[in-house]
Amino acid sequence: MTTFRSFRGAYASRLSCFLRQASSHAPAKAVNSDYESLLSCHWDTVAPTTKQRHHAEQFFLRGEPKILYSSSTFRNVPRGQVPEVAFLGRSNVGKSSLLNKLVNKNICHTSKNPGRTKTMNFFAVGGEDEQGNPGKLTVLDMPGYGHKSRAEWGEEIMKYLIGRKQLVRAFVLIDSMHGVKRSDESLLQALRESAISHQVVLSKVDRILFPKGRDPTHQMLQRNATALQQTAGSIRAGLDAMDVAGPKPLGEILACSTAASLERGKWLGINNLRWAVLAATGLNEKRKRPVLLEADRGRDVALETMPEATEYQ
Image (tube, rainbow, N blue to C red; front, side):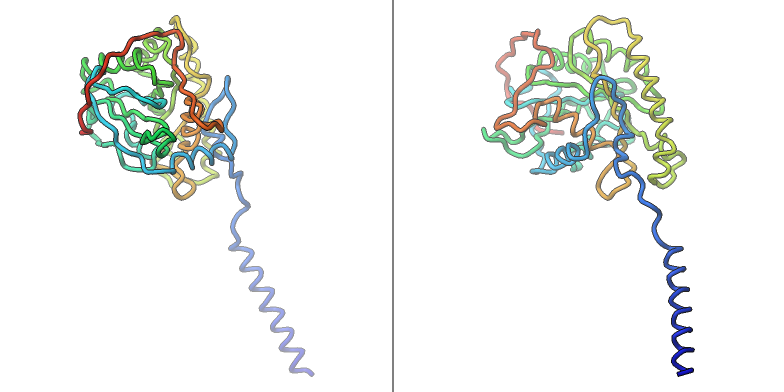
């Protein structure tokens, strides 16, 4: 009996010690999983729900994105049958890298040297539609403006932005660390004057949220989210202060990173951006056929019969 009691006491002591050790190594209490809501600033719109972000993610993961064509001039761009969204930004703003994350494939050429993208590049996304089109929407990677850009690129881009019936929105990328530069202001003014639907996206926000290359964590994101919101607020104030006739950008600023992730395969802010693209095209709604929206219903630009464009280079 004595032996049994001593064994039971020793076992209970070891069990208590084990439980204390296990408790000390237990994971910390989970942080709010809806951290994506911290990566956008909304004043005229509503942030997407977790369910909506998931829907947008599945849309972009459905089907392999395909290279359609590339063109250096607007007149050589074939007629489109589905909505189109264009991404613009200064050279080295991270536009091509962001698009690769958006469509979940390294489909755009990237380079540390500015001016790598020299043509308007069209990509089919979302899988084949009911009419046999290779994608339900088309995403454009535009040449960067600013350093090592060319005047003729800007001329052809503006021809596309003003004359393309299928364009539903232009997404203008702004480097979150440098803010709106003079070249950005020139583009934003031109978009407003031409009544082209557009909105601002902040790139490289990992430099604000996780400074000095620190490993991303939920706690650090929450701690530095205020600095990101201040950056977005400052940019919003600058946009509001522009004395330009025409419609202002959409009342939201999204923030993205192609270098930081808190969940495997989920880059910061990308699903927010995916939802914004679907909302712009009408593909966020459950319809048998997507509705083709125009960035400006008042425009009536006649499009020529266009020859085939060159292959993507």
